[in-house]
Length: 306
Image 1 (cartoon, rainbow, N blue to C red):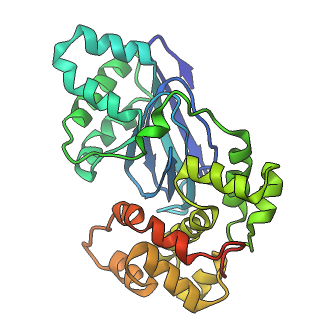
Image 2 (cartoon, helix red, strand yellow; image 1 turned 120 degrees about the horizontal axis):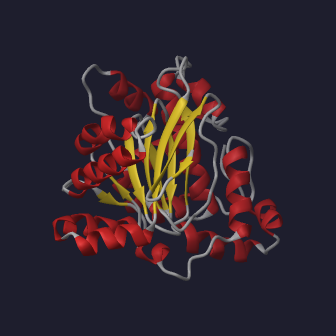
């Protein structure tokens, strides 16, 4: 990593995977993820990412990536990250009216922005060039990337507007619980134990959790389990029962029910979809938001079904 006048670039090559690191910082962050599949958390958004994923996160918006599998197991997970200061970006937009679209995109980035497959594919070689480029070329490359992404009409804002408000500060209690869940989602989990980790009552934990994630702890664990199952179904030769066990389900009926509830299709249909030659994987983030209430109602109060 190099600290430069305008841009800082980090080329992360992680053989063991991208770790769960819930954090925020005052800079904008542009991330290209390569040879990796897993889950992306930005504000209250929980979604899946794949190879070539490009996301722009605004200042002080909590976020993390957490890998589940490699596309090519012989190569490391890769995250190329570019940070640039809020003041620098604001001055750029103010001085150059030609960058008005970039300014609009930067406002959206305060809630997190995910870019379309077409735009991400177009900027991928430019972002991949950043780590080896000289400081002046990095500036040129980043401006080209921002210009192209600002013209992406299919980009999607990720997080609820309230998550971008100044009152949102990282909650250490929530961070401890999230770290525990991401490391133990395949084990039996109950809310009273999570409340002990956070040093609050179960009812207070529910309030904190829902305020920050718009999910109950149970619905969040369901997404973690099903997200990991999706990665295994795409990358793994294990049978579906084996995948269910790896992510914490002892009951195939419960696994199939929760998978269909979250993804809209069965595990068998999902695996067939991703293995079909020429098939473009389906992004069902919108389905998540539509079914949050149903997820919360269908989950038991005290523990995650297995």
